[in-house]
Length: 64
Figure 1: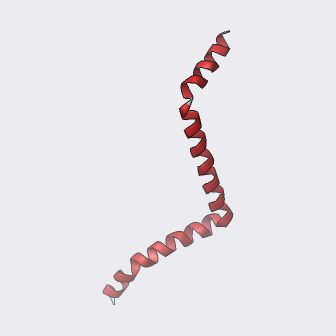
Figure 2 (figure 1 turned 90 degrees about the vertical axis):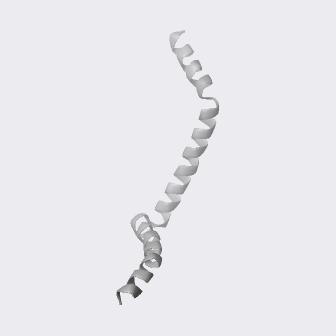
Figure 3 (figure 1 turned 90 degrees about the horizontal axis):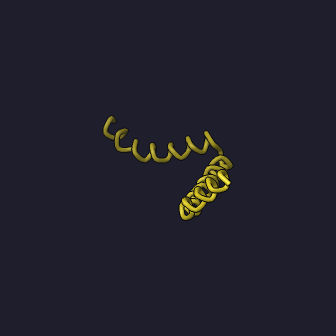
């Protein structure tokens, strides 16, 4: 009986992990975190490209 239980645990753990997240956040919570991640990644990508131009423009504007 113990061997049967240990064999079934990994599949139950994978399913229960998603079920726990779905119960905790709900569908709209998962959608929110996905959209938030996409927006954050996009901002990091585009701000990272012109990071030094933005920073130098900001400081030169302060000191004028």
